[in-house]
Length: 150
Image (cartoon, rainbow, N blue to C red; front, top):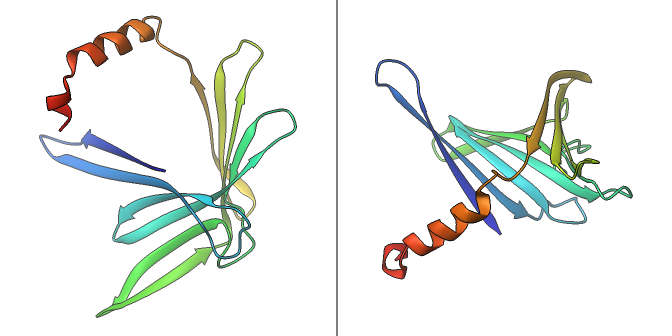
């Protein structure tokens, strides 16, 4: 399974910044199960390998707190010469997503990023269908013909 999200941001006076975020499931050498890989292209690239797990309360987690190279975690790839690349594993940078449905049946995500054990960013997402989401989905499927998809 592969998901590609493309975000385009307007910055200043017509200057456009395009940022691509690629996500896929991938086997990491020292993890028992596939991880979710998120790559941020930049000079070289930065990738986060998140270990998925299901909790007893039916919630779900994605966790990058691996214990070393070849485990889940944050990796940075940079060019170090002609045809040479260097990979660094940052064991001090961790990311955690806790995905759950609340008592009102709303999908929520608690997202935490920590560095050297200190929380540096905490976000909370709340996701629900738009009031007319079913009607929009039906209308969209009718307006797109097979020829337009090719």
